[in-house]
Length: 68
Length: 257
Image 1: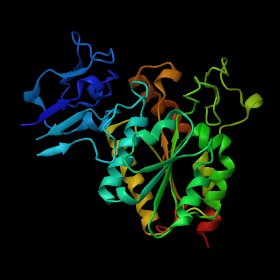
Image 2 (image 1 turned 180 degrees about the vertical axis):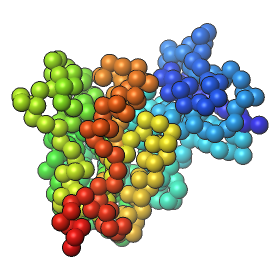
Image 3 (image 1 turned 135 degrees about the vertical axis):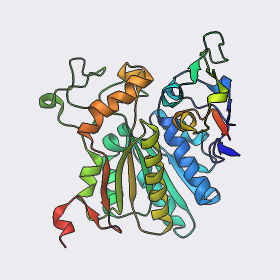
Image 4 (image 1 turned 30 degrees about the vertical axis):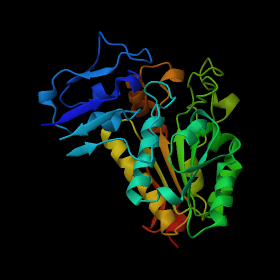
Protein backbone atom coordinates (compact mmCIF):
# COMPACT_ATOMS: atom_id res chain seq x y z
CA UNK A 1 0.00 0.00 0.00
CA UNK A 2 1.30 3.43 -0.88
CA UNK A 3 1.76 6.15 1.67
CA UNK A 4 2.10 9.90 1.17
CA UNK A 5 3.61 12.22 3.77
CA UNK A 6 3.23 16.00 3.37
CA UNK A 7 5.29 18.73 5.04
CA UNK A 8 2.15 20.76 5.46
CA UNK A 9 3.75 23.94 6.73
CA UNK A 10 5.88 24.29 3.58
CA UNK A 11 2.93 23.83 1.18
CA UNK A 12 2.09 26.98 -0.77
CA UNK A 13 -1.25 25.69 -2.04
CA UNK A 14 -0.39 26.01 -5.74
CA UNK A 15 -2.35 22.83 -6.49
CA UNK A 16 -0.02 21.49 -9.20
CA UNK A 17 0.00 18.08 -7.44
CA UNK A 18 -3.80 17.90 -7.48
CA UNK A 19 -3.80 18.20 -11.27
CA UNK A 20 -0.95 15.71 -11.70
CA UNK A 21 -2.61 12.94 -9.65
CA UNK A 22 -3.98 10.26 -12.00
CA UNK A 23 -6.38 9.03 -9.29
CA UNK A 24 -7.69 12.53 -8.43
CA UNK A 25 -7.34 11.91 -4.68
CA UNK A 26 -5.50 15.12 -3.75
CA UNK A 27 -7.16 18.44 -3.00
CA UNK A 28 -6.42 21.67 -1.20
CA UNK A 29 -7.86 21.56 2.30
CA UNK A 30 -10.95 23.67 2.93
CA UNK A 31 -10.54 23.76 6.70
CA UNK A 32 -6.81 23.81 7.44
CA UNK A 33 -4.52 26.84 7.13
CA UNK A 34 -0.76 26.35 7.54
CA UNK A 35 1.93 28.61 8.98
CA UNK A 36 2.38 30.42 5.67
CA UNK A 37 -1.36 31.13 5.49
CA UNK A 38 -2.10 28.78 2.60
CA UNK A 39 -4.62 25.95 2.37
CA UNK A 40 -2.30 22.91 2.31
CA UNK A 41 -2.78 19.84 0.16
CA UNK A 42 -4.45 16.76 1.65
CA UNK A 43 -5.19 13.24 0.46
CA UNK A 44 -8.86 12.30 0.58
CA UNK A 45 -8.46 8.57 -0.07
CA UNK A 46 -5.07 7.08 0.83
CA UNK A 47 -6.32 3.56 -0.02
CA UNK A 48 -6.62 4.56 -3.70
CA UNK A 49 -3.04 5.87 -3.93
CA UNK A 50 -0.88 3.83 -6.30
CA UNK A 51 2.41 5.45 -5.27
CA UNK A 52 3.25 6.71 -8.77
CA UNK A 53 4.89 9.86 -7.29
CA UNK A 54 3.42 12.11 -10.01
CA UNK A 55 2.37 14.58 -7.29
CA UNK A 56 5.89 14.65 -5.84
CA UNK A 57 7.46 15.10 -9.28
CA UNK A 58 5.29 18.17 -9.99
CA UNK A 59 5.59 19.69 -6.48
CA UNK A 60 7.78 22.83 -6.80
CA UNK A 61 8.48 22.86 -3.06
CA UNK A 62 9.40 19.21 -2.64
CA UNK A 63 7.07 18.66 0.31
CA UNK A 64 5.76 15.20 -0.64
CA UNK A 65 7.39 11.94 0.43
CA UNK A 66 6.13 8.80 -1.31
CA UNK A 67 6.49 5.28 0.07
CA UNK A 68 5.17 2.04 -1.34
CA UNK B 1 10.05 1.14 0.12
CA UNK B 2 10.91 4.78 -0.44
CA UNK B 3 9.75 5.93 -3.88
CA UNK B 4 10.37 9.66 -3.64
CA UNK B 5 11.90 12.01 -1.10
CA UNK B 6 13.70 15.33 -1.02
CA UNK B 7 17.21 14.93 -2.52
CA UNK B 8 20.12 15.35 -0.10
CA UNK B 9 21.76 18.06 -2.19
CA UNK B 10 18.69 20.29 -1.70
CA UNK B 11 18.88 22.04 1.70
CA UNK B 12 16.09 21.41 4.15
CA UNK B 13 14.69 24.95 4.02
CA UNK B 14 11.48 26.36 2.50
CA UNK B 15 12.01 27.91 -0.96
CA UNK B 16 11.13 31.60 -1.28
CA UNK B 17 9.55 31.28 -4.74
CA UNK B 18 5.91 32.18 -5.43
CA UNK B 19 3.30 29.40 -5.27
CA UNK B 20 3.42 27.30 -8.44
CA UNK B 21 6.77 28.68 -9.66
CA UNK B 22 8.63 25.93 -11.49
CA UNK B 23 12.03 27.14 -10.23
CA UNK B 24 11.51 24.69 -7.36
CA UNK B 25 11.13 21.75 -9.75
CA UNK B 26 14.35 22.63 -11.59
CA UNK B 27 16.21 23.13 -8.28
CA UNK B 28 15.13 19.64 -7.31
CA UNK B 29 16.22 18.14 -10.64
CA UNK B 30 19.68 19.68 -10.30
CA UNK B 31 19.92 18.41 -6.70
CA UNK B 32 18.81 14.92 -7.73
CA UNK B 33 21.45 14.90 -10.47
CA UNK B 34 24.16 15.93 -7.99
CA UNK B 35 23.03 13.11 -5.67
CA UNK B 36 22.90 10.49 -8.41
CA UNK B 37 26.31 11.34 -9.85
CA UNK B 38 27.79 11.49 -6.31
CA UNK B 39 29.53 14.82 -6.96
CA UNK B 40 28.22 16.90 -4.05
CA UNK B 41 31.66 17.33 -2.46
CA UNK B 42 33.31 18.71 -5.58
CA UNK B 43 30.49 20.70 -7.16
CA UNK B 44 30.56 24.50 -7.23
CA UNK B 45 27.36 26.28 -8.23
CA UNK B 46 27.21 29.86 -9.49
CA UNK B 47 24.06 31.74 -8.48
CA UNK B 48 22.73 34.51 -10.75
CA UNK B 49 20.83 37.73 -10.15
CA UNK B 50 17.09 37.41 -10.58
CA UNK B 51 14.42 35.35 -8.85
CA UNK B 52 16.94 32.59 -8.21
CA UNK B 53 19.45 35.01 -6.64
CA UNK B 54 19.19 33.10 -3.38
CA UNK B 55 19.92 29.72 -4.97
CA UNK B 56 23.03 29.63 -2.77
CA UNK B 57 20.74 28.99 0.20
CA UNK B 58 19.18 25.94 -1.42
CA UNK B 59 22.00 23.75 -2.72
CA UNK B 60 24.19 21.80 -0.32
CA UNK B 61 27.29 22.22 -2.51
CA UNK B 62 29.61 25.23 -2.55
CA UNK B 63 27.96 28.26 -4.14
CA UNK B 64 29.27 31.60 -5.42
CA UNK B 65 27.12 34.63 -6.16
CA UNK B 66 28.07 36.29 -9.46
CA UNK B 67 27.28 39.84 -10.49
CA UNK B 68 24.38 40.26 -12.88
CA UNK B 69 24.90 38.13 -15.98
CA UNK B 70 28.52 37.26 -15.22
CA UNK B 71 27.93 33.71 -13.98
CA UNK B 72 29.57 32.02 -17.04
CA UNK B 73 32.66 34.22 -16.56
CA UNK B 74 32.87 33.31 -12.87
CA UNK B 75 32.29 29.66 -13.73
CA UNK B 76 35.13 29.83 -16.27
CA UNK B 77 37.52 31.08 -13.61
CA UNK B 78 36.46 28.47 -11.05
CA UNK B 79 36.63 25.61 -13.53
CA UNK B 80 40.04 26.63 -14.89
CA UNK B 81 41.47 26.87 -11.36
CA UNK B 82 41.07 23.09 -10.91
CA UNK B 83 39.75 21.56 -14.14
CA UNK B 84 40.31 17.94 -13.16
CA UNK B 85 38.42 17.94 -9.87
CA UNK B 86 35.75 20.63 -9.84
CA UNK B 87 32.29 20.31 -11.36
CA UNK B 88 30.94 23.80 -12.05
CA UNK B 89 27.39 24.72 -12.95
CA UNK B 90 25.56 28.02 -13.29
CA UNK B 91 21.85 28.50 -12.73
CA UNK B 92 20.54 31.55 -14.61
CA UNK B 93 17.29 33.15 -15.62
CA UNK B 94 16.45 34.80 -18.93
CA UNK B 95 17.02 38.37 -17.72
CA UNK B 96 20.45 37.30 -16.50
CA UNK B 97 21.68 35.01 -19.27
CA UNK B 98 19.89 36.39 -22.34
CA UNK B 99 19.99 40.10 -21.55
CA UNK B 100 22.82 41.57 -19.51
CA UNK B 101 24.90 38.38 -19.68
CA UNK B 102 24.65 37.69 -23.42
CA UNK B 103 28.32 38.43 -24.06
CA UNK B 104 29.53 36.12 -21.27
CA UNK B 105 27.22 33.35 -22.45
CA UNK B 106 28.14 33.57 -26.11
CA UNK B 107 31.87 33.71 -25.44
CA UNK B 108 31.82 30.88 -22.88
CA UNK B 109 30.04 28.82 -25.56
CA UNK B 110 32.44 29.91 -28.30
CA UNK B 111 35.42 28.86 -26.14
CA UNK B 112 33.69 25.51 -25.46
CA UNK B 113 34.30 26.11 -21.77
CA UNK B 114 33.81 22.85 -19.86
CA UNK B 115 30.90 24.06 -17.68
CA UNK B 116 27.19 23.29 -17.33
CA UNK B 117 24.57 26.02 -17.62
CA UNK B 118 20.97 25.61 -16.49
CA UNK B 119 18.99 28.39 -18.19
CA UNK B 120 15.47 29.17 -16.96
CA UNK B 121 13.37 30.90 -19.63
CA UNK B 122 10.03 32.25 -18.39
CA UNK B 123 9.70 35.12 -20.88
CA UNK B 124 9.54 37.83 -18.22
CA UNK B 125 11.58 39.62 -15.55
CA UNK B 126 10.10 37.95 -12.47
CA UNK B 127 11.94 39.45 -9.52
CA UNK B 128 11.54 43.10 -10.50
CA UNK B 129 7.79 42.79 -11.04
CA UNK B 130 7.08 41.48 -14.52
CA UNK B 131 8.79 43.77 -17.04
CA UNK B 132 9.38 42.78 -20.65
CA UNK B 133 12.41 40.49 -21.05
CA UNK B 134 14.46 39.79 -24.18
CA UNK B 135 12.61 36.47 -24.34
CA UNK B 136 9.07 37.91 -24.03
CA UNK B 137 6.88 36.72 -26.89
CA UNK B 138 5.61 39.14 -29.59
CA UNK B 139 2.25 40.43 -28.38
CA UNK B 140 2.87 39.40 -24.77
CA UNK B 141 1.43 41.81 -22.22
CA UNK B 142 3.90 42.79 -19.48
CA UNK B 143 4.34 45.74 -17.13
CA UNK B 144 6.42 47.62 -19.69
CA UNK B 145 4.45 46.49 -22.76
CA UNK B 146 0.84 46.99 -21.62
CA UNK B 147 -0.47 46.78 -25.21
CA UNK B 148 1.56 43.67 -25.98
CA UNK B 149 5.19 43.46 -27.16
CA UNK B 150 5.45 45.20 -30.50
CA UNK B 151 8.41 43.77 -32.49
CA UNK B 152 8.61 47.00 -34.56
CA UNK B 153 9.35 48.96 -31.40
CA UNK B 154 11.06 46.40 -29.17
CA UNK B 155 12.59 43.93 -31.59
CA UNK B 156 12.19 40.19 -31.58
CA UNK B 157 12.86 37.68 -28.79
CA UNK B 158 16.29 36.08 -28.41
CA UNK B 159 16.20 32.34 -29.04
CA UNK B 160 19.26 31.28 -27.07
CA UNK B 161 19.54 27.62 -28.15
CA UNK B 162 19.15 28.51 -31.84
CA UNK B 163 21.65 31.36 -31.52
CA UNK B 164 24.33 29.26 -29.80
CA UNK B 165 23.80 26.27 -32.10
CA UNK B 166 25.34 28.34 -34.92
CA UNK B 167 28.63 28.45 -33.03
CA UNK B 168 31.21 25.74 -33.51
CA UNK B 169 32.12 25.66 -29.80
CA UNK B 170 29.29 24.21 -27.73
CA UNK B 171 29.02 20.50 -27.09
CA UNK B 172 25.41 20.14 -26.02
CA UNK B 173 22.36 22.41 -26.28
CA UNK B 174 18.85 21.26 -25.47
CA UNK B 175 15.54 22.95 -24.74
CA UNK B 176 13.14 21.22 -22.35
CA UNK B 177 10.17 22.24 -20.20
CA UNK B 178 8.71 21.20 -16.85
CA UNK B 179 4.96 21.62 -17.38
CA UNK B 180 3.97 17.95 -17.01
CA UNK B 181 5.24 14.81 -15.33
CA UNK B 182 6.54 13.49 -18.65
CA UNK B 183 8.34 16.73 -19.45
CA UNK B 184 9.87 16.90 -15.97
CA UNK B 185 11.32 13.40 -16.45
CA UNK B 186 12.72 14.49 -19.81
CA UNK B 187 14.21 17.64 -18.27
CA UNK B 188 15.89 15.47 -15.63
CA UNK B 189 17.50 13.36 -18.36
CA UNK B 190 18.78 16.47 -20.14
CA UNK B 191 20.20 18.03 -16.97
CA UNK B 192 21.91 14.79 -16.01
CA UNK B 193 23.44 14.55 -19.48
CA UNK B 194 24.71 18.14 -19.21
CA UNK B 195 26.51 17.29 -15.95
CA UNK B 196 27.81 13.98 -17.32
CA UNK B 197 29.25 15.81 -20.36
CA UNK B 198 31.28 17.98 -18.01
CA UNK B 199 32.55 14.99 -16.02
CA UNK B 200 33.57 13.34 -19.31
CA UNK B 201 35.37 16.55 -20.32
CA UNK B 202 33.27 17.08 -23.44
CA UNK B 203 32.70 20.80 -22.96
CA UNK B 204 30.02 23.49 -22.87
CA UNK B 205 26.55 22.13 -22.09
CA UNK B 206 23.47 24.35 -21.81
CA UNK B 207 19.97 23.17 -20.92
CA UNK B 208 17.23 25.75 -21.51
CA UNK B 209 14.19 25.04 -19.33
CA UNK B 210 10.94 26.70 -20.43
CA UNK B 211 9.45 27.74 -17.10
CA UNK B 212 6.35 29.48 -15.81
CA UNK B 213 5.75 32.70 -13.86
CA UNK B 214 2.13 32.53 -12.66
CA UNK B 215 2.41 35.71 -10.57
CA UNK B 216 3.63 38.03 -13.33
CA UNK B 217 1.77 36.34 -16.16
CA UNK B 218 -1.38 36.91 -14.06
CA UNK B 219 -2.57 33.32 -14.15
CA UNK B 220 -3.19 30.42 -11.81
CA UNK B 221 -0.28 27.94 -11.64
CA UNK B 222 -2.27 25.44 -13.71
CA UNK B 223 -3.20 28.01 -16.39
CA UNK B 224 0.46 29.03 -16.57
CA UNK B 225 1.53 25.46 -17.36
CA UNK B 226 -1.10 25.35 -20.11
CA UNK B 227 0.11 28.72 -21.46
CA UNK B 228 3.57 27.15 -21.87
CA UNK B 229 2.01 24.47 -24.07
CA UNK B 230 -0.19 26.89 -26.04
CA UNK B 231 2.06 29.92 -26.50
CA UNK B 232 5.66 29.33 -25.52
CA UNK B 233 6.46 25.93 -27.02
CA UNK B 234 5.23 26.93 -30.53
CA UNK B 235 7.68 29.88 -30.38
CA UNK B 236 10.47 28.03 -28.56
CA UNK B 237 10.35 24.47 -29.96
CA UNK B 238 11.67 21.78 -27.63
CA UNK B 239 14.46 19.45 -28.61
CA UNK B 240 18.19 18.89 -28.93
CA UNK B 241 19.81 21.78 -30.82
CA UNK B 242 23.31 20.45 -30.73
CA UNK B 243 24.94 17.28 -29.46
CA UNK B 244 28.33 16.94 -31.05
CA UNK B 245 29.08 13.47 -29.66
CA UNK B 246 25.79 12.12 -31.02
CA UNK B 247 26.24 13.97 -34.32
CA UNK B 248 23.19 16.22 -33.95
CA UNK B 249 23.64 19.66 -35.50
CA UNK B 250 20.93 22.26 -36.05
CA UNK B 251 23.32 23.99 -38.46
CA UNK B 252 23.15 22.09 -41.73
CA UNK B 253 26.56 23.16 -43.09
CA UNK B 254 28.35 21.94 -40.00
CA UNK B 255 26.52 18.63 -40.18
CA UNK B 256 27.69 18.07 -43.75
CA UNK B 257 31.38 18.30 -42.77
